[in-house]
Amino acid sequence: MDYKVGLLGRVALLAVSLFLLSYFILSGAGVFAVSLFIILVMAQIIFFLSYAESSFKKVRQFLDNIKQDNYTNVYPVKFDGTETDDLHIEFNAILAKLQEDQAEKEANYQYFRSVFQHLSIGLITFDEEGKIQIVNTAAKRMLNIQQLSLISEIQDINKELHQAIHSLRTGGSELIKIAHPDGIMQLSVYVIELVLRDSKFKLVSLQNIQSELEEKEMEAWQNLVRVLTHEIMNSIAPVSSLAATIKGDMESKLETGVPVVPGELEDYLMAISTIEKRSEGMINFVSDFRSLAHIPTPKFQTIQLKSLFDQLTVLLQHQFDTHRILFKCNIEPDNLILFGDQNLIEQVLINLIQNAIHAVEDTITKVVSLNAFIDEAGKIIIEIKDSGKGIEAEALSKIFIPFFTTKKKGSGIGLSLSKQIMRRHKGNIQVSSVIGQGSTFKLIFNA
Image (tube, rainbow, N blue to C red; front, side):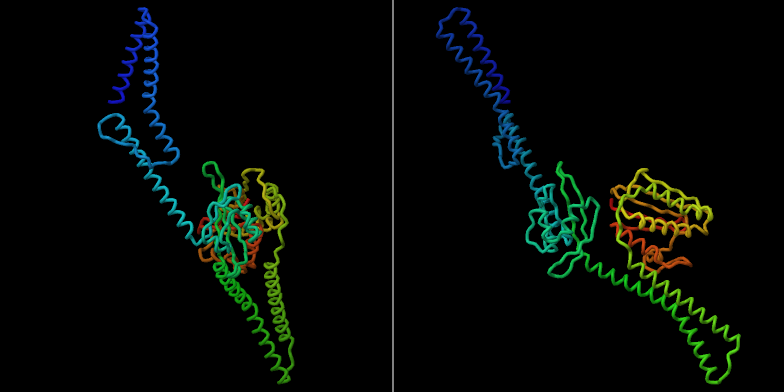
């Protein structure tokens, strides 16, 4: 109550002084007395304003402390029940809470910074001007550096890595090979663009996948050798057996001097014809194998997907009509544009649509859909769906292995070629299938 009592007391004293000043002026008192009261009134007004502003000064000081993150000041408390005492208690409680929050915030920051530094994945953050904010220990080890101030300094380490960091957008990734004292590293570079308090910055993750690649490469070679061995043995075994039979029969006749009758000549001719066909099959097999290793470099150009889809529809319409297949085509938006090699992309789509046609041959509902759209991550997706029987889980994991096929007739290289073509376009191909409902192949392009 001290503030209110003091304020009311000063108002009352000022009112009395003004009343006496008015009385002296009206009664014609002397100049000295009037001047004295005028000075007294002015002094009271000054003291009144100063008293009124005293509490505001404390509030202003309190707010300045908060603005400057200074929570160490303590306001004196006398515990005398006055309003000033209550105000000081509230100030101290608020400052203590803010100080506690600041300590917790600092503890969380140090915790996440410690986690950031000890991650096995290399992490780098930098702002729009290229100034490095944080670079963790794993990133320093991968790049073989002690310190990094500007993202442009990475250009001296590896130009491809520097270019990838600047060109990649959110969700984009690229595989970069860099030299390191411990040997060649295969870095998977992943970028996320973030906005924090109206400031843009990039988070770059670097992961050394050299060992994983070597393991996958070895697994791929084993699968390839297994398939090649199977195909070669299937062709060579009957040829070898048939040749051995003919050789043995002819040697026997030469030793005994028995003449060859016309019927036996026909058998020999048939055997030689069979050997010729199997040899041609082996030549075609080797030719298919060579085509896997000689995919042309894509000639990038602007592709109007609507125009491309129209061409495919005209090209395959006869097959749709012959097999009574309902073909659906949809593009969103209609003017969707893709940057790539039109011939190679067309080859991939024809192969996938042909597979879809074969998949629905023995089904009651025969529907093949070709869709193109932009997903939530800004990537261009081309989707081929069919209403076929679906692909078994065991086969689903092997369909991209060269020469593996689930069809009675087929070389088994179509999907392998398609995957390699998508890789050349910095994209990917994914497949999902449900038994009895059909399969969906997705071509994913990083726009």
